[in-house]
Length: 128
Image (spheres, rainbow, N blue to C red):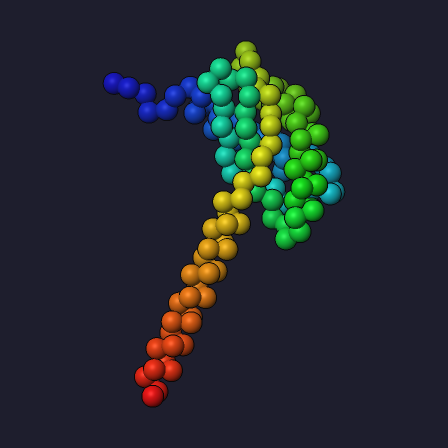
């Protein structure tokens, strides 16, 4: 019987959980807004972990600054992660902005707007 998850998937899930806790409890930079870890992709040889984060800010400059702060803190996060996960190789941490949540909210807003306009047109037509 085949395994449900590969080793890299299990490692990625563990890294995601631990980095989320580290960002919440250990990183104390006041410039860093609300950050959530939306996913982690680990290379097959476990040398690099691409950490996808969602940052809840309206200002693109603040989002870019937050990504820079996370990139600068990556070696520290890796050190903390090495203390929490028992692994022979600890992957290099790279942070990337995940725009899927923001894009999903934008698309949802467009759909809601289209539905409102459609209902308004139907009401206007029924009154005529």
